[in-house]
Image 1 (cartoon, helix red, strand yellow):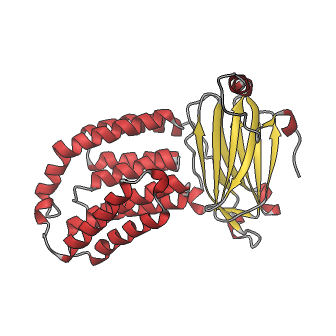
Image 2 (image 1 turned 60 degrees about the vertical axis):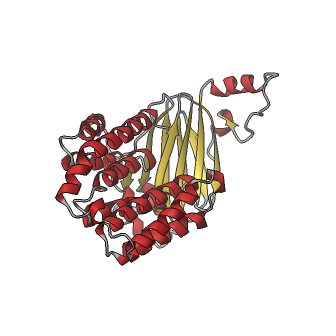
Length: 350
C-alpha cells in the first residue's frame, strides 16, 4: 500500500470535514438554492431520498463480510430514482455523491477497477450538473482519492488535485492538496510514461480481452501487483535478474491507460511497472514489465469475477524471515505454498 498516500488521504479527509463545515458549505449554501433550506419535506423526491438513505444505513450497519452485491445494487437503484426524478437539486446532488461512495465501496470489496471509473463518473456529474452545490468539494476530493489510491494514476491524481485547488483556492483543503500536488509534479517532471502503445495495435482482431488497469500495494519487503482484465486470458512469466515480465495472450490495452504513469509505493522493493503493446503486438500480446530492487521469490495466480492476475513479490531475505517466524513453536500459521523460489523462475516458461 502507498502508505504516504494513505496518510495524505486520511489527513485530507479530516481537513475536508472541518473546512466543509466551517467555510465552504455556508458560502455555497448562501450563494445557491441547492441548500438544506431548499428541501421540500414530504415531496416525492424527499420520500425517495429517505428510502435510499434507509437502505444505505441498513447496509452499513452490517459487517463488511455480510454485505452482498445485491444489497449495494438496491441502494444504488434507490438513489438512481432520485437522480432520474431530478425535481430537487439538493437531493439530486447528494444522491449522486452517495451513489459514488457506494460504487467505490463495491470496487474495494470486489477488486473491480471498472466500478472505480463509475464512481468517478458519478462524482463528475455532481461537479458538472450542480456546480454551486455544497457537495462539489466532496466530489472533487473523492475523484482525487480514487485516482491516487485506487487507480494509482499519477497524471489523473495530479489533474484532480489541480481542479480541487482551482475550486477552493483559499481553503485549508487547497493547502493540503498543494502539498500532495507538489510531490506529484516533481515526479512528473522526471518520469517517462509507463504505458506505451504501438499505433493501430488495439484494433487487431486477435484481441479477445482488455487490460483495464494495473494496481500495486507495496511494503518494505513485499509487494503485490494486480492486473485487471475484462476476460480470462493465457499468460506466461519470464524473469531476468530483477525484472519480471508477464506476457498476456490476445489482450488489448484499454485506451484509458494510454500514456499513463503509475503511482508506485515508497517501499524499497517495487520500483516501476511498464505496460507495452508494440513489438509484442505482432503475436497479439501485451506485456507488463515489473522492475524491483532485489527480488527473492514471487508467485502468480488468477482470480475471477472480475478477471485479474495477481503477482506477489518478495524481497531478498524476506522469505527466510517469514519461514523462521512461522516455524516458531508459538506460531500457528504455515508458510505460503504458492511462493516459488527465484532459482525456479530463472528460465522462461512456455
